[in-house]
Image 1: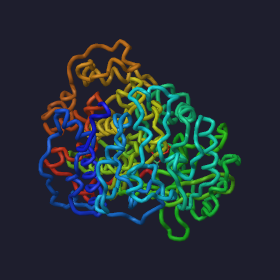
Image 2: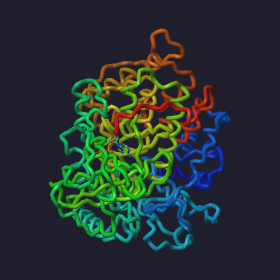
Image 3: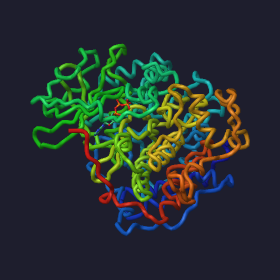
Image 4: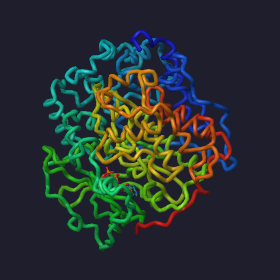
Length: 593
Ligand SMILES: Nc1ncnc2c1ncn2[C@@H]1O[C@H](COP(=O)(O)OP(=O)(O)OP(=O)(O)O)[C@@H](O)[C@H]1O
């Protein structure tokens, strides 16, 4: 959309949205379902596109829907300043918005009262930055205002968003080298005692570094896959993630017991003040991923059971400390939502090892689904989906794209609570403004636009993954199981079910780099066959509304794909059977100790 296409109405939507967010923060019952449409949705409406079916939100007899997600827990250090006062009203950037003068539209059309103050803030507003009075801020011109459409195509024309320029990390970045210098400064000067975290530390990772990390395990087509994922792909069947869990219960959580890396130069000053890992007693190894080894442990003082993720140091990296981990820690320490895993603190080991201390959940959805004989019931799927969507809503509202949503990154406890983990690929979007790496999202959950090599993408990539997860919750099987590291095969699998897109179905499709491949023509959407309304074949049964939600989440065109707000207000969640209350969710025997 041309820059001139956004105007007062968008501003008011942003402000309304702000109010809705603030109301939710206040925790009034049911308000999460009355959220104003996000900007993107508003744009769609004005474009005459069909909205998701809506209806009055019913409240479960068991009161689940009334849960106050807005109630804030103890506030942690928040570099994003999400609850900040006296700040500029801004709306999240979307793939479209980054080409426009969104900020100015919002900022200049209305002066805000304290009532209007934002719950959703741009990541550039870090607490450490002295904040201008609101009126002064409203006059600030966003550098993107002068950015023409198409400029983003050029990697060299990266425009630094104002946060970098105005933050305490500001050094007048001009080149990738400068960015790397800043990373060093950030790593060296930051502390993880929750006093001075900054999202920029993660953001400043140059694209080159990011790509390097993303492809570090040799995956040319996606996020580096872990040994487990690799096996899943290779063997064509999933391996229960708990299988590899090691029995180990030594009395001490001495880092020498674990495969601790030699001391890299990671600028350890950032850890000054952090507690020692020996405050925790190691109980068992839960899992090993690409970026860390996760242990179950016990707080020696409180007996609380926690999960410790040991950050794998990257010895090939100039800084030793993986910046994906820095990003993960920063984002997770900033997040505060019941559907996002809670990071309590960061502790250090004897050498240079660093551990993230998280709340412990007994399972992840991958492990659970691998052990289930029967799929989740409709009301159970609704319970899980709503929790997932609420968590993602929180992220997207706070400018964060997770970029790796999949069942193994969704933790589940025996109280029916679902929590999103693994923020190694997450990033706050909008800063710096430039095309993001395409090497994100594990292949089976990766959206068509990513698979086709789009350079600019947004929150819709998470929504696609959510569609894949919903299908999997209903059937226990991954919906699109492309061959390992084969984007074309993954796309073929998608198109075989949803139909091969055309320029009519997905405007812009043919200009994507990967669209030149010869895909088998499949003119129909066959998704309904996989999820019929009534089944004699054992296929998962899905009502008309349920199918509508799934089909819209899996829209190949990211512009038409449901936003998280649209998904949350979809009529399926109001239809009987209503979502099951968490306390009635099934429990699962733990394979972990
Ligand atoms: N807080 C937690 N409580 C219990 N188990 C956890 C917790 N966090 C992570 N896990 C387990 O450890 C696994 C790996 O964690 P995580 O995804 O954070 O590591 P990773 O190295 O980033 O993995 P990946 O290779 O998927 O990127 C998860 O799939 C989950 O099974």
